[in-house]
Amino acid sequence: MAKANLIRVLLVDDHIMVRQGLRNVLQAYPNIEVVGEAGNGEEAISIIGKLHPAVVVMDIIMPKMDGIAATRLIRTNYPDIAVVGLSVTPHSYHIDAMIKAGAFEVLTKEKAVHELYSEIQRAVAAVQPIVILEDSPTAPMTTPAAEEAENPSREKLPIKESDIPKGKLGSENQQ
Image (cartoon, rainbow, N blue to C red):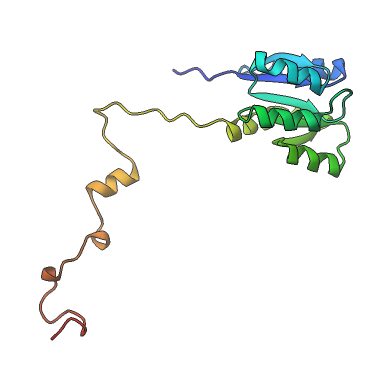
């Protein structure tokens, strides 16, 4: 049985209690690994290259560098890393700015307790390519396209003039 890859998560929030709470919530899931924490966007940018997270959970309002600027830099320099924004009370202009900067979604911190895991899953699926395993050379092709290639339907077969009984061609072909 194949083991699913761990989703590596970086938590970025200026409140250590929020980061600890998010870490506790995410540690309950066996396919999540919290690989690091940062107290602001500047710290996040400085460690992201070393930690290689798949997802950054990013607070919007922080000192030094806010989540909007940090998200823009992350998505520009690391397009395969998803960002999920967080805010205590996100105003529509903050949400719009985070989405325009490249965040996958913005959640309230209150909703994060129940929705963060599913948003992380969706964000990773949106930015990371799907792995397609090749069949062995001896495995039969069983896709609809392969079946169609082996057994084409009558409507799709090429019709030759010799297949049509005489006198049945349209008037443009009769002479």
